[in-house]
Amino acid sequence: MADNIGIVLLVIFSVACLAVFVQIVAAIIWRRKILRLIDEGYYFIEVQVRWRRKELRPIHPSNVDFSSGVLRLATPISTAVY
Image (cartoon, rainbow, N blue to C red):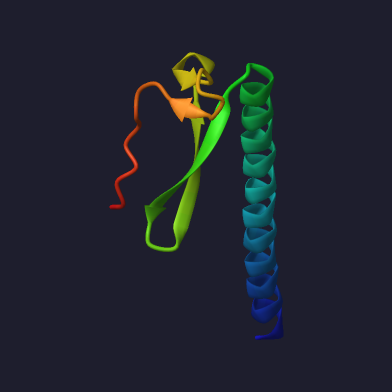
């Protein structure tokens, strides 16, 4: 019986470590994507996607208007809360 408990605990620990590893890899990939977009000149707008959840939406540099001295979007994006 004690051997089975050890195996179960080992499996649970292994799955938890795998989940943490996947989250770390996903965060690294997301960070590289954001940094690449920043290097390309993109701007970001924080948009509330759902209740208590916000998201950064990239805005292409050609969609930004600085003519009035204030950052404006030339074409509006969808900011609807779902």
